[in-house]
Length: 259
Image (cartoon, rainbow, N blue to C red; front, side, top):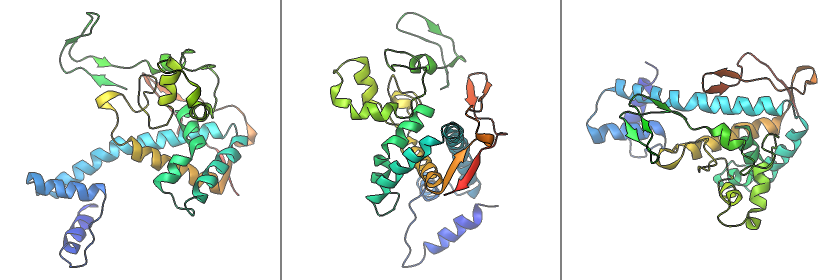
């Protein structure tokens, strides 16, 4: 009902001589329909819903977590704002891929602020342990993120941890645990010490788009607002924990003030 008029308008526009084909997910799905002989708009709607279910809540949770954390360290807003300003100054204020890459302190903050698989058939690990079919497999990422061999002062929240690592990259010994961490110090990085977006061939293919989207949202807020908790509280809102999942409490509020 909501998607059909958009699809029909695109198909009609494609008949024009001056038509410029959009470069977005909907267009890719429409072309995929032609390739595989699908004709139902209902299928397009299903694909769009599936993509939305996979992408929207994850971005929202990440941004909310970042804002809840910033609200208790409002003095850090200025540091991140300057990081955004210097990145955009080189691109005349346009959010280009280069500008996103240059927001290194924002990147570090998001990574610091920041998997579940189901076995379809039984298989044996290298140590002989068998994973039964139907079992859910999870990676103990909290154990890695609190490992002092990987992250010194792991229990301390350090917004510039990964920014500092990137600055000191050349000082790390090749092959050391610290060198492995440094090589995966960007928010989009995946590795044995960086599991936010998965690992190996199962790593999230949309993470580059997602990180740029998150940075644009956070950068826009930083450029236009100061933020803090109500009454200036320095205590971060605790996350809601449900089984293996942890997410920000949707019932909390923070204060924004136009700069």
